[in-house]
Length: 165
Image (cartoon, rainbow, N blue to C red; front, side):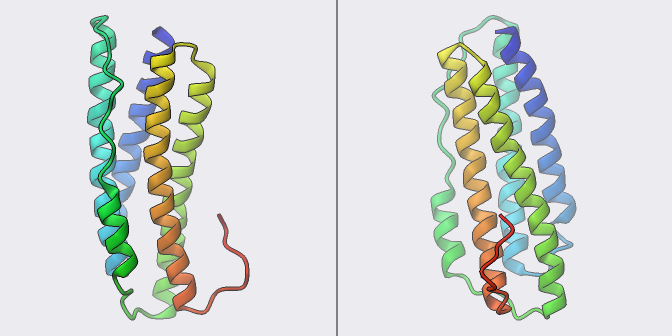
């Protein structure tokens, strides 16, 4: 399990960085819905930090880790995101928000790729399940950000058949 410990320690660092990104950019985005999404994602990354920290502690004591992690409660948030209207910000504010949202999307994409590759390299089935669970959570975050970016594109008639994701 030493490989898993190293993977989780790096993952812990990534998750803390993600949490800090959302915290520091929450007030920079102009769309109220983007701020709400960043607050939600900051809280989710915080729960990931705690979850991973507990897994590392269990590995240190050779305690069997419980991979049966509870799923994230983002279905309610996703449904609310669909129904909420975007604020009537200026075109330039929306473009600035898109830039920050794009960075957030890429951060989540990096997490997905990291957990995916790590799960391929690890042989222990329980560790694979843990890393796959983390990957699925991050895929949910990517989807939230993608939907929000698409709505801003649509609001500003930026649908040119090209989405940068």
